[in-house]
Structures are given as structure tokens and as C-alpha cells.
Image (tube, rainbow, N blue to C red; front, side, top):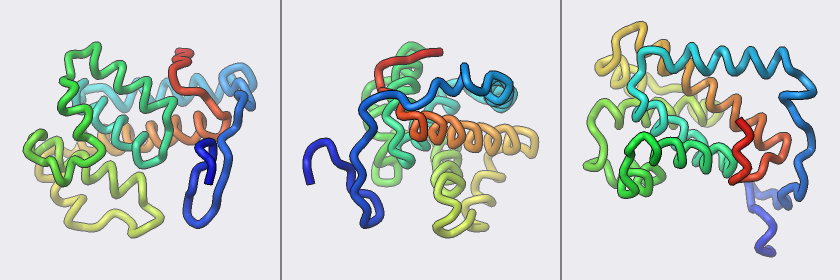
Length: 165
């Protein structure tokens, strides 16, 4: 496998070399709707938690564009380099995160990988123990939204470091 190839689920795919589609320009109403969903999902959630969830989902989805964007945003918001480096291995480095953050990260993992095993009751119940009903709904909406953004960025071959917000 060359350095420009990615091994994924027994398939090898070379990343696209150019952006395939300017999604915002091609589907402006849809793009604005996703922006609206994103803004609504964030309401009432701790901004640091928002970034941790977005970073984790972007790790799982291998979305370099969103990962770069959200780690940059997290740094600007005062997140430590130490914690940013530990998001990818949060289960093994749980002491870097609060119990509430770990519950949110576990839910992020389950929802992002929903096709693998659904959302186990214990993961949902752990999150529900740390988040009220409205806040839990906001958290779920945030996870759904970052997964949507990841898929848009991956499908259109957005390049990391070209934050085009």
C-alpha cells in the first residue's frame, strides 16, 4: 500500500486529489439547513464538550478536514494540547476527561458507529444519567450533525487545512 492509499474494511482507496463539488454552492438550501441544524444542536451545550464530540466523531469517520477544523477551534477556545491528543484514545486515557465527557464520548462512538452494534442500552443510560432530556437531545443532534458534516467533507474531498467556513 502506498502512502497515498487508505486501507478501509478490506478495500483500498486512494484519496481524491481535488475537491469534487462545492456543496455549499451546488445545494445552498441544503447547506444552510445543515448550518441551522448545527447551530440548533449546539444550543445549551458546553462549547468544550461540543468540540470534543466533533473531534471524536471526525476521528472515527477519518475526516481530516473536520478534525483539523475542530481541533483548531478547540485550541482557540482554550482546550489543552494534552486533552486534544487523548480524544482518539479517550477510553484508555479516561482520567483526562470528566465522567460527563466520557459519557458523551461513549455516546458519540455508539451513534457514529451505529451500524456496528446500534446504541447499547448501557451507553444510552450512562449518557442519560449525566444529561437532562433536553440536553441529551441536543447532544444527539450534535452527534448527528457532525456525522453529516463528516460525510459531506469526505464525499466532496474537502482538504484539511482549507477551512472554508
